[in-house]
Each structure stands twice: as structure tokens, then as C-alpha cells.
Length: 404
Image (tube, rainbow, N blue to C red; front, side, top):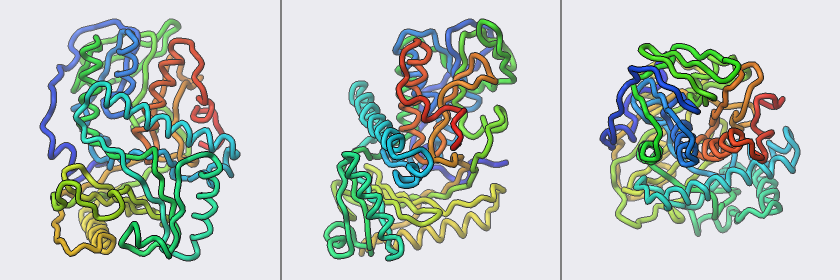
């Protein structure tokens, strides 16, 4: 199955940052991380910073798998919303899940600032809205839940929406905290380079043939060498589904297009160039870039087979939608079109922690649209687990939950 298609923006506009060797000799370490996307990068950063002897393995080039197709929207809100999550987990746990993603946003912002990472990070507001009167009450209910939980939100209605956005809105939630944008390729490579500087060993073009659980750890076999480790962290995204028999997963192919650079510095197409997401199913989302582009994505399909004709139709639908939403006299062209296969769980939460069927394995699987923030708190939780410290709220995301 072709999982990444056409011309992803992040690996097109960025040159390869660093080259790492493939693994050619047997080594021992404390922890092996399998996967060189954003989940693996964050785990590698946290574990190496803690002084743990860490090895990262990537079968391809760092940041060139599903992370290259990410829109890299950072949001505290979860796709199922508090209302949907409350029906599955209860209101208190739904609040806790949202609070975790908000904390992850702040943690990631602190990491970027502390390391002075040049990754085009910018905090911006986010809008969840509907242009359908029949969905207005659902938005109002969600707003009330978020407000009661203490989130910094503002209700937008039909009458005041034009003060903020040029397109029709019947009801919306404008969030003033916990959302932003980033270049995932730059972020991944900066985090891994920091880990490398802290003693981590990094290997590209090193696929894993198999992993054997031992009484005292794991034995990892690669084409040319073996690794003995105490623990292995699986951070391979959707690839883990088949390898570890993860049930009830929802694989979809999602589509994204990006404009050329057509916005001037500090030019706004709507309120503070917020991230925008509608309530459709599947939903459409938009985000700016710091260099004056707009990305729009969505049009998800369950048919994972690669189809050039269908892809072209999806890109045209997104372009038409973008022109309708921008309502801008400025013309623009589409420069990048790409698609990728992504995974989600039934409760829109990640899978983090241990699985009793796979001893000495940890999992950091940031399934859902919040993969970067999920992986941020997931990496911290796994570090706490490794250090035998209390990993708060880990039960919300573990394998054994019945809402997965």
C-alpha cells in the first residue's frame, strides 16, 4: 500500500538536515526507540535528556514517513470534543484528557523556546465552527463544557462572526490558548539532534526485522546487527497496527494542499490567522504558515488504495473550498498537493504505555489529529514509567481501555 503520495510540503521546502549512518554492528543500550517521526523524536529527546542510554532506529530518513504529510496543527482540543468524549469516558476523564493536551502544548512551547529551535512555531487561536443551523446547539453545548472546565474560549454566533471571519458562521468556539502551528520536519530533526548531542545514537536506513522479548529486556534484530536493550519503544504509527494486532483502528487517507507564499508578513486573512476546523464529517481544517501560505486539508476516505484520478478530484474540492473561505481579492496558486494514510481510535485518543502481551515494550502511538501533542505527553509518561515514577492519567491512554 502506498501510504504517502504526491509532493509533501515539509520535505520539499526543507533540505535534509543531517545524515545518520545505518547500524552495522551489535550494540547494547538501555532503550531502543523504533521510528524516526515526531513520536520517536520526542521520546528520544526526553530519554536522552534524562541520561538514559538511548538508540533510535529509522527504516527510512528521519521525518520522511507519515510526519511528512502532517498538517502539524497543534491543538488542545480533541476530535471527539468534550461532549463526545464524556459519553465514552465520563465528563471528569474528558476534562483530564483535554487538560493533558493543553499541558502538552505548553510543554512543547517551552522545549522549543529552551532549545531555541527554528521550526516556524507560532501560537495562534483556533476556531471550531459550523455554518449549518442544525449543528449550532452542539457547538453551544461544547462551548459550555469547555467554559465550565476553565478553558479560555469565546462563543461566536452569526451576528458577531463577521467581526472575526469573512465566511458564514452560525455558531463557533474561538479558543485563545493551546493551539499553534509548526514545521514538523524542522522540529523532528532539531529534537533528535539535541538527543544526539546528549549521547543518543541515531541510525537511519535501519529497518527492524523482529523483536524478541527476553526475561531481562529485548533483543532487536536488524539486517546487519543486533541490539540488546532493557526496553523498546514502538513509535511507528499506523505500522504498529499489524505488527502488534491493535484492534478497531480507523485508517483513512487524508488530503492536503498548500498555496504559494501570497500573504505579506503580518497580513491576516481572518482573526489572527487562526487555525480553522468545521464540524463536517469528515471535517475540513485550515492553517497558515509563517512564510505566508495557507494549508487546507480533509476530504478523508476509507478506501486506502492509491488512485491518481480520485486524488486529483479531492485536491480540486479542497482548492474550491479554500477560495470560498478566504473571500480574498488576492489571487494565489496551489504549490503543493499531498496525501497520506493516518490512523485514529474510536475515542480519538492515543495509545500509550505497556501491553502485557509484549513484555518490555512501551508504545507511543499518537493516533488521531493531535499526534504531536499526544506524543509530547506520551514521551513524558513513558519516561516516568521507565523511572518508576507516577505517570499521571496514563490510564486514559493505555491498551486495556475499552473505548479504543
